[in-house]
Length: 129
Image 1 (cartoon, rainbow, N blue to C red):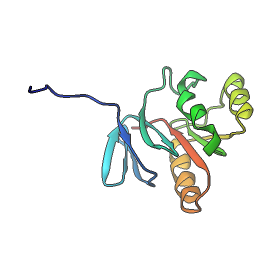
Image 2: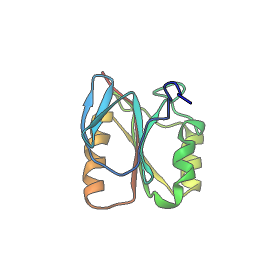
Image 3: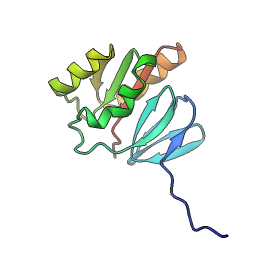
Image 4: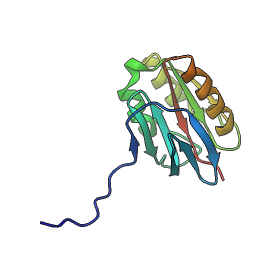
């Protein structure tokens, strides 16, 4: 039986440095993705926070599911640095994840360095224009 187009969640099953960002998306592993992304031990996932740049515990549920393999979470909050809500910081601490919010550009650069050093790093990156 012929099926129609199957739409799946955006997911790259591997760790890869971010080659470029801007124009509302990211380039990595010879691919591009429009929108925000989560860079996790399980791979790079398309991500849509509910009210960016303000993030909630629910926005980072996939990060918390993989907390055993994450020591540092870099949070790219767009073009400006935004503080993470206290509830979110507390939840990350409970899972022994150190969070570091910064602009998306700074988060991309820092993520690439820590990834090259084979650190237990993850990143939540809000897309910028």
